[in-house]
Length: 412
Image (cartoon, rainbow, N blue to C red):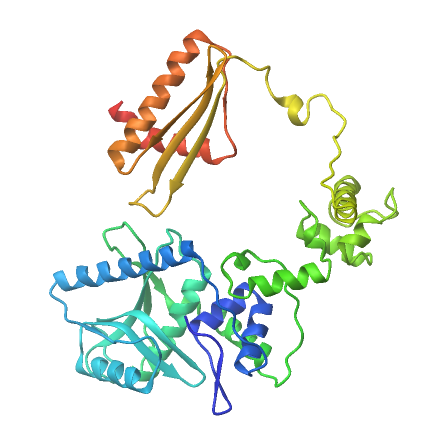
């Protein structure tokens, strides 16, 4: 991963910066401030992300081995930085016509990066009767916009070396026998230019405009998340209200409600009609803010029970049955081609006594055995307790059961 840098007064940007700008404008400003020496980049360690990084590396190595088994010559550019030596080695390998260049280092203008794979194709260029196209090995089963942007940038840098823009770029997803997804670069060129222009405009000034750390999905994997969370808490940001949506935050800001405390003290009933959403939904988050404010002020955890309404909430649940089962799955989507449900657990009562059964699965055979055992248990129990229901925490469990049925149903 490479971040915004300033070398000899000039910006150095990478594909990571491009994707970072796409995910969060405030991230770009923080990285620029760090490059100017105004902030120190925080250290961030997440074991889950480290495990994903390692799996991604293994996926790349496996793909390179796959290319070698096809008789292709592979050159690995060692190191992590985009140094002058690494760039020279990459260009030398391209000019020599090596079949595959792993972790090729490229630089052009303000941009630099290391592409997972540069693969020789039979398209003439300034190099000779061959040229190169970029490929990225990704763990994601669905290619995201950020991946395409990275490939567009790498392809642009490749084009500067070989004097001809590559026509295609490729993504190597997992568990597809290394069958690449092919993308025509001209289809994404305008979008690539737009995002690059936006990034350069955001950090091109000596004192760029101020941004705010609005909550983003990228916060879960961002090095700066602790700093941003502290700022939101110091500012009593509306996002601290449990269950509030970005649409509701925008509506409240338009009416001068800028903090969680201000929302907690907002007079009821509301004096305006929301442009989006309903008064009822805003009233609910206002009451949630009030309870949180009172809990914070008193130092005690507070709650209020809503009045029961027929046909809503818990009133939608069926009558309890002695045979009811409570199910939970734990899965890892990166194991094998389809992931692995490595733990199936369920709770029930037997002669009035609570019982729990858990089945660990370390391979497909274990997964199948756990699935079959659970289905057999439910069918037998339903003979004794016909009204029973299987309860679960969310949408994951029904989806897992359907996937397992599709995978093993024919053999049952």
